[in-house]
Length: 280
Ligand SMILES: Cc1cc2nc3c(=O)[nH]c(=O)nc-3n(C[C@H](O)[C@H](O)[C@H](O)COP(=O)(O)OP(=O)(O)OC[C@H]3O[C@@H](n4cnc5c(N)ncnc54)[C@H](O)[C@@H]3O)c2cc1C
Ligand code: FES
Image 1 (cartoon, protein in one colour):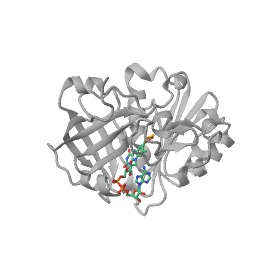
Image 2: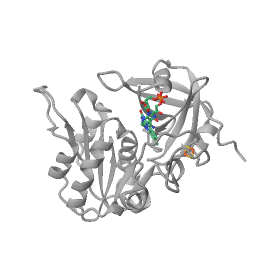
Image 3: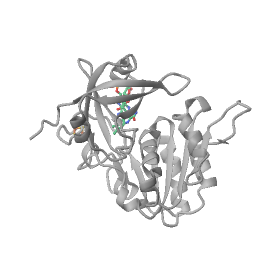
Image 4: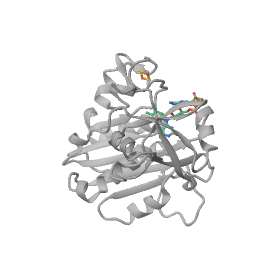
């Protein structure tokens, strides 16, 4: 039996500074052997533990899609000890990657449905993975209309700006990019909070499933908008970011009632969350 605590060694291949405040960077890693890459088979929505020897491990959502071969990407906000050390690392440095962990978005259930992706701030990472995955020519026909509402506080805080522009230009995905406010006269997208733009742009819940990732305040105000539109709680999918340690359902650090967010989540439907203690 393999040791679940043992990370795969990975090399930093590229570091992209995503936001103008320089607090968000995307790290592109390559596995040291093709066998490790093959064993790390993941599905959009899952996360991994990034480990820096002597510093610690942090759970981070996987930002790349399994359809992107030869590398794996994570976008990390610099908040504390481990994430700050990661931000100081260089291309060529070797570190550890443990996973994939947790469950994915409900891809089987999403087949044949209209998919509404709603994201705010840096929680857009696993949503990027999902969009790339759904837009793959071999997967696109599995989904009906794909709509995305993605917001940040200001234009300079939006992630993946080149990709956002490419998706905007496509006719097989409806993008609704927004910022809370801006004085940039060249800004060509929406201005308004994510829940408001969701209410304006998403007109029907018919045969639709919504995936929501963002700060708690965004989720709090988006949830009633989706319910008003007619989304039943089992078709509102959320991803939780609890504090974690082992990531594999052993240490008990991340439990909500009898569920472990690391193992039974981090993806839950609102219907499931309504039956759990409100500790998230
Ligand atoms: C499933 C999952 C997916 C995640 N995906 C991402 C991602 O894609 N990108 C990203 O940047 N971050 C993500 N996070 C959050 C990330 O794990 C934390 O920011 C990270 O653990 C902070 O570690 P640190 O050592 O840098 O900070 P610490 O020194 O541990 O803490 C610094 C500050 O951050 C707070 N903090 C630490 N961990 C968390 C947490 N899990 N939730 C809320 N606040 C926390 C602490 O309370 C403290 O205020 C995810 C968390 C989970 C559980
Ligand atoms: S982090 Fe250890 S049980 Fe979830």
